[in-house]
Amino acid sequence: MNIGNVAFGKYPLFLAPMEDVTDIGFRKLCKRYGAAMVYTEFVSAEALVRSIQSTMNKLTISDEERPVGIQIYGRDVESMVEAAKIVEQAHPDIIDLNFGCPVKKVAGKGAGAGMLRNIPLMLEITREVVKAVHTPVTAKTRLGWDANNLIIVELAEQLQDCGIQALTIHGRTRSQMYTGEADWTLIGEVKNNPRMHIPIIGNGDITSPEEAKQAFDRYGVDAVMVGRATFGRPWVFKEMKDYIERGEEGSADSLTTDDKIDILEEQLRINVERIDEYRGILHTRRHLAASPIFKGIPNFRSTRIDMLRAETVDQLIGILEKCRDIIRG
Image (tube, rainbow, N blue to C red; front, side, top):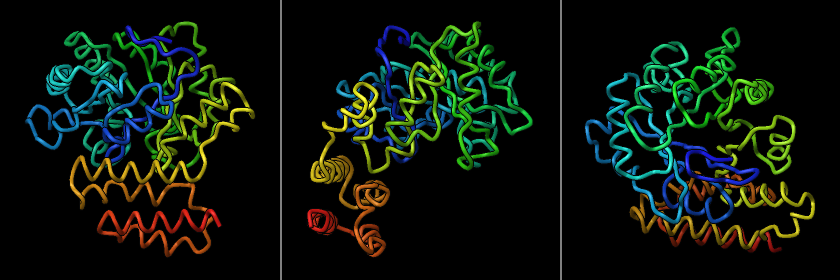
């Protein structure tokens, strides 16, 4: 599988772009443990055009995380084109157009998945961005606005005709948000459409190595994108990759719980070093609270509350070390 000049090989696993999650430290960890491509947090075209510093900071990428994509969202042609030109100066490997974010502050204003209610504008934005930059342009969207408007098969062809070089499909409608189950049958229908010739990346409810393998085997997608299952679990890409390549035997190379706690502590230190102690802790706590490695700890609820209340690195490391001792028994 190729996107532009970037070759990914068979069964590539991508880290989904997620606000307040896919910062540079987390991306590097996911890359280290097997992500074939990572994406920055999605960025507002309007904020880029207005040179809002907090948004401009999200464009910082490093060579060790490549290939890396930067995803932009907006609701008009002019700002999206201008934003794509700004993003290109950061030299990402891919510029991705966000036509899938369902949250109210984005979709409710006509951007992200809100574009599913204005397909002509979505297509015009796509055509103009493709023309405006030299970097490969891709797009991410959903099955449609709601269950009565499942338009993805036709829409995929239209986006392809606009010049995108790959398409990511989240297997839900905007109305579903993140509820219910992702419908991969329509993703498979797009992939098996003989008129489609660009790579199709499937996204939605991929939380285990078995589910990742099934997505490739059953639906034939070119890549699988993993989102919420990465919270507190950047090593999930290694687990998935090992299973896809070697089946049950891949589990023999699994990381130990000690290894995983080391990784989470490293993530904490990276964030504190990158930002500051207070905000670095805030940025890491959601990962710690969501990490599946603590599920076996008795009465973990109180420990989780302690994690969310910790105000210093020493406090948080102390809690993690206590968890390590409990797990070791």
